[in-house]
Length: 238
Image (cartoon, rainbow, N blue to C red; front, side, top):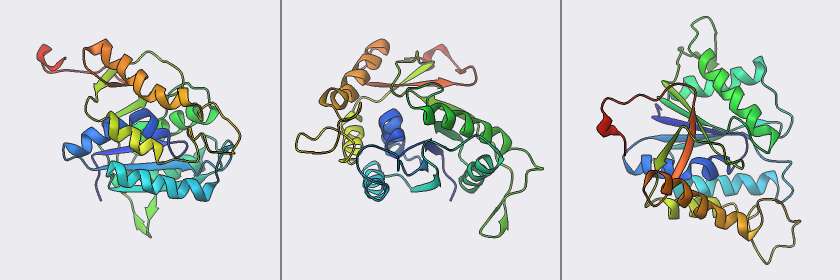
């Protein structure tokens, strides 16, 4: 299956938090989008890997993505080496996306920056003809995405561009709250974490509103790019 967009996240819920509105908007426009989680989030303070598997599947259904896979890298301990790069390359070549979305280039959680660089490096290597990979015993053809964009997460990094996601913040929030084990629940007996507070849940909306304010719309999601963004006309800018 060829996808238009393939979004990678170090943990289940990373993609929804960073780019859920953009993904919902692109799917509504007819794009085929997939998600690949690098780990099962098994080191998370709340919940378990099994619970997060079910939550990730529920969130994927809410967003309407075409496919969601998990590479089952070691949460907290995966590294950017040949073994892990080849695993990501297999996913890129399998789905041949035009655009790849991945973790923030710098963030509070160490896996986010690692995952960002790992996926970015794999996108380049995936285009090299002398790197051999197989999927289901068949040789894979080289494939390099046209663009790699990094969504913004915990840290308020300055975006290189902002996507207007007005009208899609409710879908994004619904997909995030599918991870009931991770976010605010006044009845939960689990330990508190930086993302389990009511303030964090509310931040999904107010951060999107602030980014939207910067471009004159209701809600926005910010991204960093590895290349200069280009436009065909000044009219392309909102």
